[in-house]
Amino acid sequence: MKLDPVTFEVLRNALSSMCDEGSEMIARLAYAATISEGHDHSCALLTAEGRLVAHGNRDQAPHIGSFEPSVRVVRQWIEEKFEPGDVYIFNDPYSGGTHCNDVKLIRPIFHKGKLVAFNSSTGHWPDVGGALPGSFNPRALDCYSEGLRIPPMRIFKKDQLDKTVMQLISFNMRTGRERVADIYAQHRAGRLIEERLLELFNRYGDNTIQSLFADIFDYTEEMFRKQVTELPDGSFEFEDFSDCDVMHPKKPRIRIHCKMTIVGDKVTFDFTGSDKAPAGPFGFPRASLETAVYDGTLHCFPHLAPLNHGLARSLSIISTPGSCVDIQEPTPASGYASGAYEKVAAVTMACWANAFSTINPKRMYAAGINLANLCIGGVHPKTGKQFVNYLWNEGGQGARSYKDGNSFQMMIFIGGATNQPIEPLERWYPLLYTNCNGVQDSCGDGLHRGGVGIDRSFKTLGAMTLTMHGDRAEVTPFGLAGGTNGGPNTLAVRRAASPETVEELGMHAMGIRLEPGDHVIYRSNGGGGFGDPLVREPARVLDDVANGWISRAKAETVYGVVLKAASGPGGALTVDESATSALRAKLRNQPRKNGYGQGEVHPLGQKLKAPKLAAD
Image (cartoon, rainbow, N blue to C red; front, side):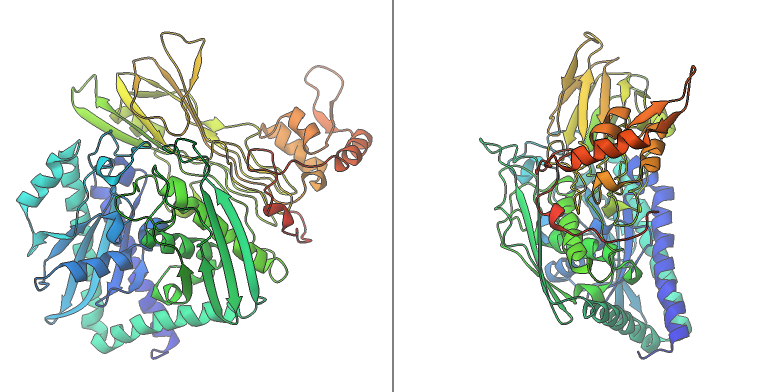
């Protein structure tokens, strides 16, 4: 390292802090509830060459890994010379973005007339045009029905908004005036980061800050490679599937396959065994593949966070262009986060789990909640104005090799985001929530169970259109080491006109018309389990029943725990020790069903050996 350790740590944290400040400013100024309430936004700082140096501590992983390719494409596409006060807008998935809803503002930063860095801010806009409110289109056959694609173009010159570009954007989006506010929020965040960085340049000098950038990369790479050498050389494989390619005539499952190879301190991820690009939206372009691998890796090496170029240059990633993890234009991409992204991150973590199984078994995680994108839109019956609302559910995380999975948490790949609280949503949109509670028996089972999903059902107070773009209704979050797979994402509606009938909508519902009084039933995944359910302590199973997480029936049929009630009305449940021992002995002789649905055991996941660790 060129800098002394104290200066290095002070300045490294200063870079993260300025990105935190930028992200907080976006949340305070933006109009989109996805940003102001859900915190689906990120800020980053990159070198003049476009190498990621820092980002906010609560920023979203799918955004973070895309910053380098995004700045790279801006540098390639923009022919005019960058000037102070220039800001470029960009969202194209195929040249470095994620999906069209994630809109970036990229700002070159100058010190004493020299380009020294870039900063970039991303916000998930709730609508960017396209066929349906919210721009998610689960039955799209190409990208042209998923919203406005924006190539790199200058939207601010000398920090003055180009109104022609802004009008072009807002005219092609529902609630376009709100998007103007979101652009100003992201622009102001970029100016703040620039101000903070120039303060460091002026205080410490160019040489020190440029040395800091290089030291950050070297430090991260050295730390990572050193720990990789402690793992055994070899190849470790895992696979996962989507529910189906919804636009294919036969609706086959889509396979994500990862082969991770370790040789010394070198790690290669090979995804060439994955299926070709689907007909419908599920896959993602190459930039998002890289991001998902970084994401899964950092969950197994959390002390290396935040992500920077040092880790990116330490991994080799192989893919086949035209496959589901390396789609080409115009294959649709809007549903990437609920589709290929979550699966790639999960199988990456599962490959690392296999590598860690004999060295450090505390870095092993089953799969958790999968994103389900629910969008509603229409005209508000009270204001008479158009609205679009993009909703998501928190849910159950996967069990760890040493502890139960957490319940009611965000998807692991957007852990810095938050749920959107019921109260402001009811104030802004014609909704009335009827439920916000755990879903019993939704967890995957094991020595350590997964977290439970959540029920966020609501009634409509006006006419609107609903679209769902999700996954894992059939292929649910996988368990490991004999743990069972978690529960499904579900979406249904009970019509006001026929309340006795529940209509299943599934994960690819498109443009469903809702009338006032319809009841939307929206429930999320539970996480996969870890280890054999028959060795979970009966007292812990009793606690789960008492808390309502699992039913008495599941306690018996899956965990082999027989409960009995004390005599008298309202008698407390206790464990029948002798009956439990007999039932568990019987269940151990019954074969487990392999498969990918709830309660089944993932064929590759069961091969992972459960470590001998004390229960939490």
